[in-house]
Image 1 (tube, helix red, strand yellow):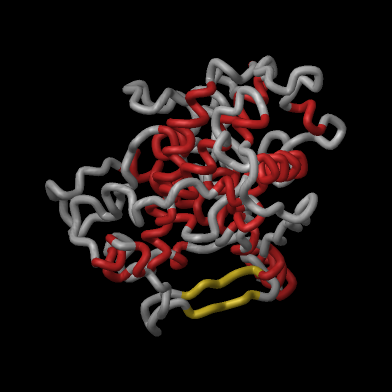
Image 2: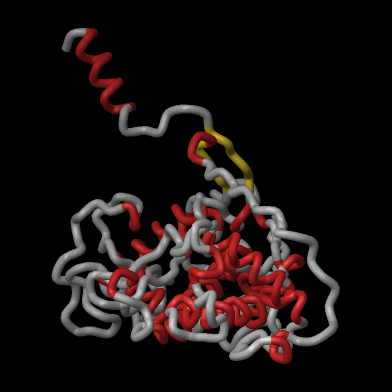
Length: 359
């Protein structure tokens, strides 16, 4: 083979690699494969967080319920702080050309005639639920409307059941959705809808066995394994990390070798499932057709909705101090259940508050 041909072959082979500068960070003990390698050109930029519309008023005084009609969620919040939150939601969600009119009839603010007001009320409940009951995932940083919406009436990152994908629990299987490179699964040929079973249904992510041979403890089919890997590809791209951000490559299955972030991700999957099942799906009859997917289900959230390429949404900045009404009541530290159900789980993972993430 001529030297020129060999050189061209080398260039073609290298074309499949990601060239350019890389950022490498050791995240575990040497020799365990726990190292994050990031293409610095692909690091997502942190969204600019808008300044508050005006300083947060002091608490107290007449409540919103005493001052306005038809306040069903934030009635106990002081009127001044309620007004402040409404001004923030104008920044976070409402189209600038509509403002308050996006949700309200300006001639009758108490009216529920606009579906957007009904949806907003339920989303306020969802946000309070996340902040009060899912500290196992959002910690003390919490979320606000801006975490998902980023100034858009509808979050840019959302999903609905794809064409040809059965509803969770269906025995029909995937009619389509295989061998079609898709961004949701890292442009692989894995099933392109990893969300229906895990982020709307209650399927468990179970892939790796503790043995090379079949056993009663490992009954996951190749088909299910592919769907699980599809979800993991989504998590990886949503957070802008590789597998060793959570897992130890020595044993992807072993909880006692994993990083603390795996426990946080475990609760995150269940938090998203809770939001989709108990808050968004409950609005199916409220959303108009243009706010639904091809199978008639409303658009739902996944990991990218909040994270958008960063391991911590908004770079880890909390906006709750300027929106205290969204915090909700103080919750138990950890929801019922825990990661690695059916396996021996280290105490640190059973109690995410004890996780430090230290090497």
